[in-house]
Amino acid sequence: MLNFDEKGLIPTIMQDANTGEVLTLAYMNEESLRRTLASGQAWFYSRSRQELWHKGETSGNFLNVRSIFVDCEANALLLKVEPTGPACHTGNRTCFFQQLSDAEVREGESSPQQASAGPEILSELFEVIQERQRTKPEGSYVSSLLEEGLDRIAKKVVEEAGETVIAAKNQEPQQTVGEVADLWFHTLVLLAACGLPPQAVWEELRRRRR
Image (cartoon, rainbow, N blue to C red; front, side):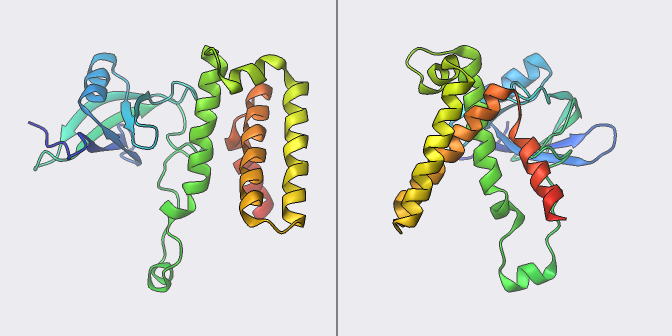
């Protein structure tokens, strides 16, 4: 009997079945575990979106499950998997690619988890945009914007960029934050329309940091 927490979730570690490398940590509920067992591919429960998600459904980076283990107290799972691509939404093979130094711990600097919060929410938002692009639900702003084409989307990006500059020049902090959020959102829609993943932008930014 598995010990799910008060929210019905259990932490689940993914380990490369061939190399032993730890790839990522996610959460499962009973339904996602059942789907994993039935399909042979990892399913999880997204705490931020509060819904089931099939790892790799939008990215193609599936985790093919070879075996499942439970810890001695039945409150965590270990999946030995064969990945078809990067396990991390950043494009890295594993989510554990940032090393935390003793100095950072002592000085109370931002942890890797905090540092990844930005790209994580952008990647989650991009997955939603791709889902709207694929399913075209009625009444969806994103799907209607994509239907109107690249010219319309580009116009929105330019419009939001202008409004961001105006808010900043007017020294309106809260409005500036809102306008930047609109700009980033429409930029993600633009990437989706061009068939480009946000991971390509992360890699370009890393290249420029060197």
